Length: 543
Image (cartoon, rainbow, N blue to C red; front, side, top):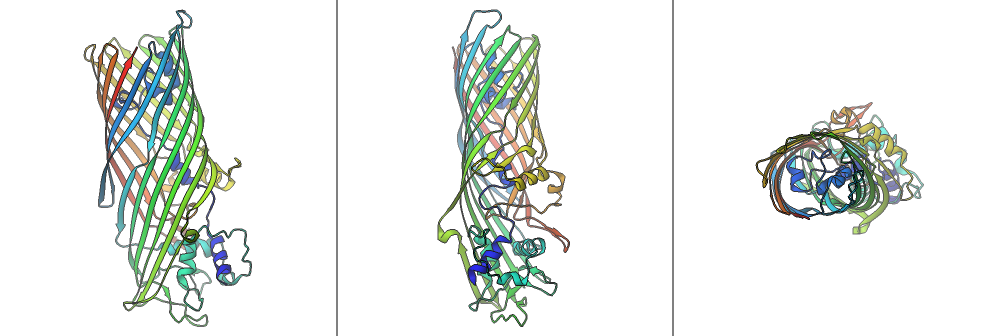
């Protein structure tokens, strides 16, 4: 009977076991301001300027601006500070942001003065972030979310718990947190089902009910990176038009450890002597302590293409445009989940249950992923021989993200949710450079990236579907970068120093809200703010 009940409970939950869901694809699709120190110090506003190793990942037409070959490397030291609630965690990381070479081939032609090629490595995103916090007075429980999704949304009832189809095609054992919180945790030695209970209305109930109080604690530790290796070609047409084509190969490695814990007083738990003919639950002088731990390791390799154009109608004005195709990824997830419950009454333990995925071994799955396409428009003004001011706008079509099986067949339901949850985000960058003398330059910049989620997500109007074994999801609202820097040139040698202060405002949700015909129950969520400081140093030579 145990397997039969487990199967029905698992298939009743809105889980896509073998692929990523909408918010996971969003997480894997993000990039941030990185690259050479000159590029960073002007907030990345280089779309109409070119002549920098970082432009291969932004507007590849920038490679056509080069008149000489360029070889450089960029190092950075990141001081990360993340605050969730009243808790702040700090850490320091060292990275190599950019390594690149551009070769300039002079043709001694007025119509095509030069053709150039280049190879660069760029770190597009660092996923390193660690935060923890708590909610002192929660208004619901993750177990209530599971109960609501199981019975009230998907319509499973009392008799379904005793079905006979143990070979249900949806049952694959990948969701032990569902099993733990709906069966293994909820049965006594007689095999009786507790905690998620059928009440008088014919629906089911979690640990939290009238009279229940409690607190929740969470910890999120993320690690990893997304790197891009670029091969670019470009040219110069009559010193008026610059064109470029870039082929990118991407490597993604992401790891997360997420922990969630609830401590509930007067919790609705099963009676130790539960009998189907009598009341199944008690909530007087009871306590339930239960937790959920999720580990995920995501690896992926992908490819993309970029096309770029820079037009210089006058010496003082430059206009740029670029298009980035989506990155097409082949992905692999490895994951593990564990959960544990301790139930007490009058200070004495009634029972304890725990379960881990696959008898303690990791699960894995493969799938495909497509990130958004991007469009960039830029304009820059050159002020004599001493000044530059540049403005970039970037459109990110988040609603075009896709995820599918390992045969490139899109998951239609996930596609629909991507369209519901996300909207285009907009990035504006402005930067300037002032040449103090032939050797020294001063730079500054600012950029802002708007939220990717629809208003209904931010205002909790959707029941958010998550993937596999993790009910948590997170997203960014706004990201700001305030930048400055200094550059030094001596003959063919150059060095640049940049400072970047990033402010990222995010939202963490331990699970989705419960919003259906039976009413609205809030989730457990927190505002997360990053104040990250980066020092970046570039060393290079032009010849």
